[in-house]
Length: 79
Image (cartoon, rainbow, N blue to C red; front, side):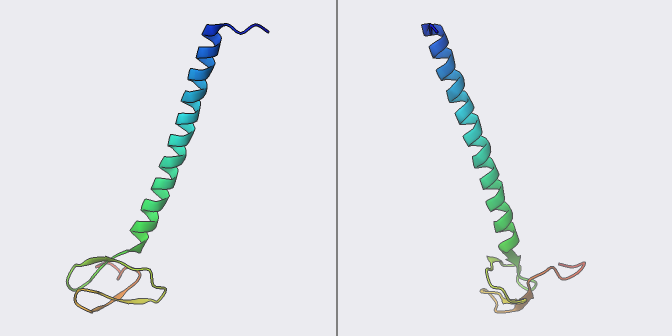
């Protein structure tokens, strides 16, 4: 099989394009997964409105700003 210079360059360009597209889609999926995880960890204090991250496993969380107790899940219609 004879490979011309034109075919060699086209295969390198198409292969590079394929690799870049696969890596960009994979990066986007990983980034969106980490955004969802961060959104689940974010909590807003019911009293002072301070937004903080919680990684505790308990149901009640202390606000670092005003030391109020907050529920880990939403507080019904108001929260």
